[in-house]
Length: 277
Image (cartoon, rainbow, N blue to C red; front, side, top):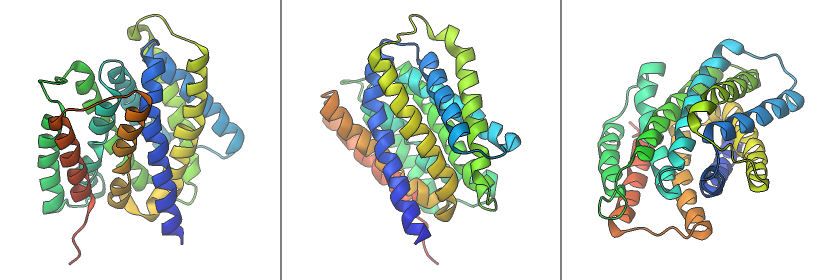
């Protein structure tokens, strides 16, 4: 029952994350991405302190926060330049990267399927970045960095919580550090800050649903399915991002990009499956 509950909640998180790509694309286009992240995670930090009144594990929480901060800083900066759908798919390259970092952090050896998925994901990325339709740009490069950061973050969450019954102690420190680092990055994000009614609405939604709720689910339930199964469920994120982007932003894709998306989805699934002996 615990495992089923974990799967359902993690899947719900992927729906929420998928929705954030087009709505953030709208507000970040006219705003400083670092300032947006700083405010989003500041709101999430305060809310978490009010709702979860527990002693914090600052050592492991700050390590998680470092990778979370770098990931969101590069993702939102890249989103100003690249399309919402491309951002969603490139971000989700963290899924086949999870088994690789699991090997170094948790000593979990990647399977042949997982190694093959890593190679095929590179092909998928090449097809997605169709030079004749939408060439690879600096925003895509920043999003690649974000994918690496998220992969490490996912593995560390499982690593720090699998033998820990007080996993919520990791919540506030990582949200706090993510906010602080993005405030420090704000001067290099350019002006204006871009605060508007839409900015505030999206910020509050992402702070509550895509940050506090999502990270709480990761900390509380990911350990019940493990890093690889969680990565398989996260395959839904780019799919939902593409669906919401097509509906909200009317984004359209070339044949090459559609093929790239298909290869990436297969890579993510293949990289997340363990063969039974």
